[in-house]
Amino acid sequence: MIVCKFGGTSVADAAAIRRAAEIIRGRLDRGPVVVVSALAGTTSALLAAAEQAASGNLVAAIATVEASRDRHMTAVSELLGDDAAAQEIAADESVMFDELAHLMEALSVLGHVTDRSLDAISSMGEQLSAPVISAAFARAGIAAVLVDSREVMITDAQFGRAEPQPEAIAAACRERIVPLVRAGKVPVMAGYLGATMQGVTTTLGRGGSDYSASLIGAAVEAEAIEIWTDVDGMLTADPRIVENPKLIEHIRFDEAAELASFGAKVLHPNTIAPAVRLGIPVYVLNSLNAAGKGTKITFDAPRMPVRAIAGKGNTVIVKVRSARMLAAPGFLRAIFDVFERNRISVDVVTTSEVSVSVTLDDDKHLDTVVGQLREFGDVGVERGRAIVAVVGAGLGDSNSAMAKAMTAIGDVRLHMVSLSATGINLTLIIDGDELKPVMRRLHAAFFDTETA
Image 1 (tube, rainbow, N blue to C red):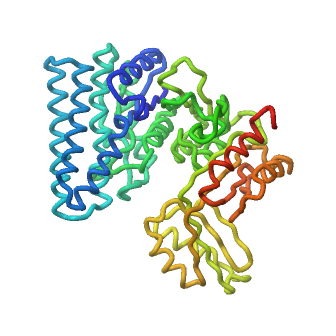
Image 2 (tube, one colour):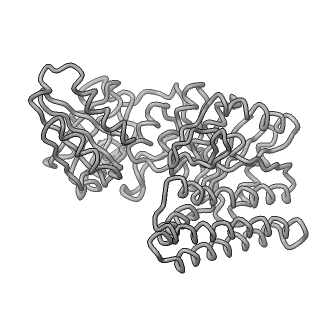
Image 3 (cartoon, rainbow, N blue to C red):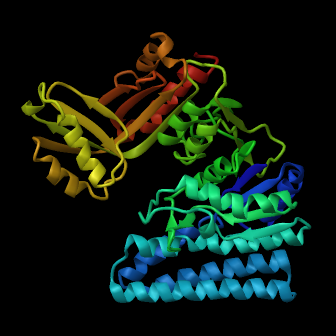
């Protein structure tokens, strides 16, 4: 059994969905379970519409809903024609769009959005795409069966970033997914969304379709998890920043997780975790180039000093300074309790005898956090920073790779420097406008054969 996840660009329109069907056709002997994203751009459009509705611009919000309706109806027509079965799918889609319009109207009356309402709206992208894709697969001669993700992906009630319940998911998969595969069927289900035990719709956070695939893969003990996207695999750097980055054909789980956490766009940071637990290999493949090698992610990839360079901007540094930190047991724990209470994830941490600095990429509750941190000492906030990560399992084996990295960046000002405990990641915090040039210098130093 394998799990095949198709991202938004891999199901963006009728042509992309037909390509996905052919990919699955070639894997029928391996017992595929299909997890799909919303059609490319749908979720972002729906979230924007929700904000418009809540701010009083209902006309614009409804226009967005109607544009999405037209797009989905076009896909239904192109993929399924206009027979009775196609008309039934179109009617079901129309009902969901009517529901979306009603939700927008409700938000315009309330004048604000809640995490629960955003989950109800943003999850509609996958709820709309999955039935169309399943029906298209069936029309192509694949024994596809639509499975409601809310009956399988069981989560808690932390709307906006719900926490999956692995035991409940495994039990649901044994009941709903495994029997279908054993009967020669192809389950098709929406990624990104789930539901509480009470049936209330939740989402796993942006990029959560990858996470869904990995959780399902772990639950059914799949032999492999395939992430189908629009690039040839994981690369040595972001191609939007570095020209001609190289394909990484084989990478370790821990390296891939670090790259995902520090800016690599191919994978959601949580994707790897369930697969790592069971040692399930993950493949990143290109639906536009199905014959390509892609990237294989396993435990046993060869160790390299530097595997790739990652980076991300819009980073905030929070600094807490207090003489009370000196030799005070539990002080750091108290500081990090503040971030935990506000559900803010910290990326990079550096400490001294009387200060601690952390980086955040989510400043949603920053004012509240700063207010609570002032109980411990002076608090400073620096915006407009960026993170660059040099990642490689062999990075800490010698000083030469780290020395090369520091030489490559030259006289760029460093606000924080951190080497991970495992020695796999050298993290540099720099000014935001230095992100692209620093990534290019580092990539040239390690991957340009003429200069390396």
